[in-house]
Length: 292
Image 1 (tube, one colour):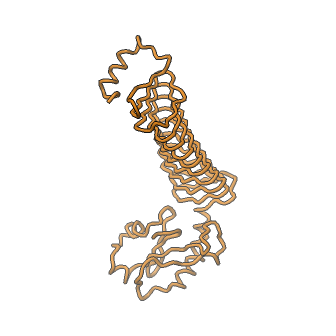
Image 2: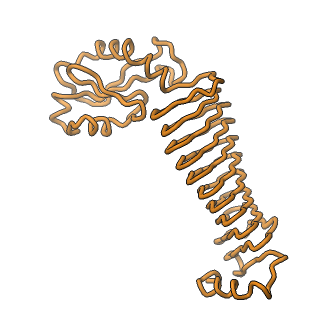
Image 3: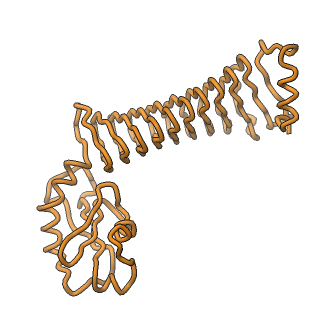
């Protein structure tokens, strides 16, 4: 099981990557075959981990070496490798991979960042945000937000929001929201909402709402509602209710449509829908399977 901070010990050096914790991936980058023979002669899978389990406790005495393989080469000295990594590399890892009580919106690039009570900006990075942290993620960033964290995700960012987290997702961002999370999804964002999450979807966003989630859909957004979710559909939004009878349709506006397959199948359209003007459009949708 690969843990923070994973590295590969070689006879004359150590190898680690600020974004990577997988020993298999590290060995692949080194061009070393991950097999029994090399494990007995060429490399050792190592990890520097906190004794108390708290990644944010950076007292050097709190960190120890863990060997993640049963057989090691004759040249491997555990105490020497531990001391060398803690002296030469662990301070660099703490500096580049952690933001603790940081309020200056420091920028991190091409790394994995662990955030606690901080405001940061990241680009092409992965983030684990805890407590009251705030993150602005760009590029291909990935964020896991816990506690009361706030995240703004842009471009192709991916976010997992838990508890009371708040997320604004733009571009082709993907969000999975749990607990009491709040999400605003714009453009082509994709959201899966669970628990009591609240989502506002705009542009061509796609939302799957489960349990007691609440969704307000705008533009050409698409929503699948499960459990006791509540939905307000606007513009050209499309809402599918597969089977749950607990869905609360709070409002249907503009040209939005709701396909309800629970109970007696039906289509709900906006009350101001002009049947004369949009008959052709409605029948076209029916022919393409909207009422199946």
